[in-house]
Image (cartoon, rainbow, N blue to C red; front, side, top):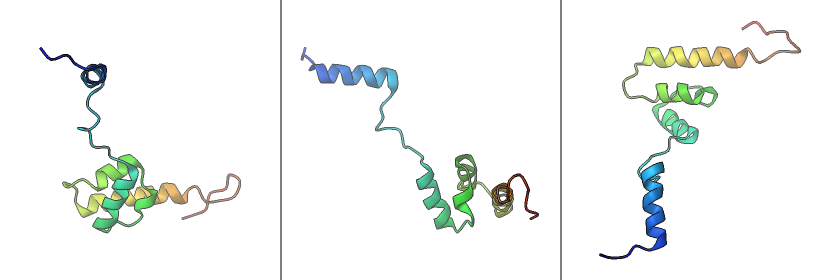
Length: 89
């Protein structure tokens, strides 16, 4: 039986309880922005992470993309105004 080094033993325990970080692929907002830009989606910078995940999905049609971006655009425009007054869009 080959003795394990302390680093190997700790690494195995960490992977057992917390999972292997190398196997997970992180989905960041920046990577989603790149995908949306490559697909030619307008207003991708004002979308939230959840909306970006929906918009960059392979199974979505152009009408759904338009609906999501329009709702995000309305939300974004509602923030413009002066001290409580809303600007009519």
